Image 1 (spheres, one colour):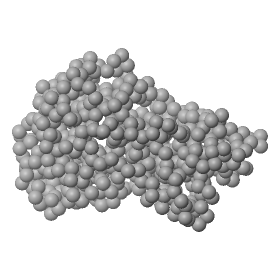
Image 2: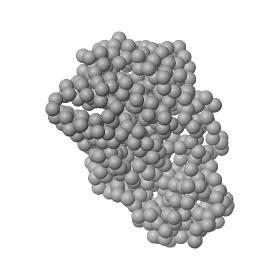
Image 3: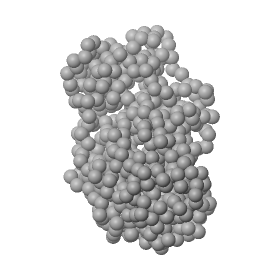
Image 4: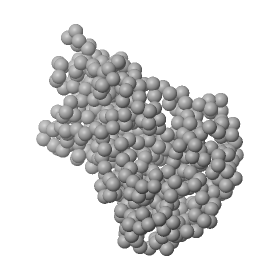
Length: 540
């Protein structure tokens, strides 16, 4: 998705962004759960909005230290406005002395001369790490994250260091060649004990993406309970996070009941989803129809846990940041609508723009990485802005109980709003982005509450007036909003100036090539009432 041209009120949007930043709570040292929410020591909601930083690959070193200094990399995470880092680690880092005790220099040397240039760059940029044991460098990373007020989730990603995952890599499920449950429990215990030194470590993901021919619901239940108990015994402050079956995509096996633990208020479930989860179907199927299908699947397989009173973190999702992958682009626009509707905690894959080595290739480029190949800038700022719109909670403990509607535009991550002559989409905290949907009409929440959204004429911006139209959701996704006027049917659409226009509804069904996403509006519940401010910009 390319950058959209911003319309004439954009200067006003920027001033509003500065005035209306939701105040994020300070670094929470101990988190727990309250029904489906993650909360701090005071019972206030803390929304996880994070990014994965891989440290589980062959070198067992957090990626990117050949591109910049550790503190610079961490400060870029802060600048991108993430509040959490999911830091991955292989079991052998904690349990196998032949891995854990080697230094950074030794770790690269054993991979051969092809790593010499990479090692030289690490020495140039992070000289103090060269002769440190790998586990000590891991601690340095945790310390730097703490010093920059970033929460951490430690993710047991794999047993043997390397790229993850495939169905037959020997790391997928309990009893696989490299997945001895007793070694795994030992590793969890050691890492949870280590984490007590770092109050910013708030959770432990027990195992990344259980998968493979041996996966079995009863074995999953037994071993995940053992893992949770081991982590809690070693560090009772941590959230314990369980990933589902089928590579972390499904908790259908928990329809009959969730794991029973000896402690309460710490259990969180983690789901993963990518475009490639469904092969190439996003690009080869009508976008509306396939988005609705995936939404229904996730509701049945995973999101039911919210109704049972358990938090869900989307622990991995992402897209090709180059912006030219139709399959990925279609997936992401649908998926952020799911994140917004359910106000889910999330961690995107990933930080790394490149890896030291992957598949035997030094300097492997990661096109899903938020950072560029050289780790010096954001690869796709449009995609980052869309994620930033999901950073703050829409509802939950600590926010007002009364809810209203936001008209969320998943293509941009912005919301519909009206401020005098400025009418279209903008940051969701802009005043009068709040609506009441009643009798099939959208009424303004903050101002002129007796006025609602009115069709004027085709290809002219809608207005907020006393005489207004009925709008109802259509299409499989329920994200097209239709009205009837002048004997025709029209849907909301965002034009190139980001103005809300009524145009003929398109891409409802059948057509594979058609892109409906400028017409998609997800109406979500929120209790985060935008503050009212005085507009001083001309025309507003």
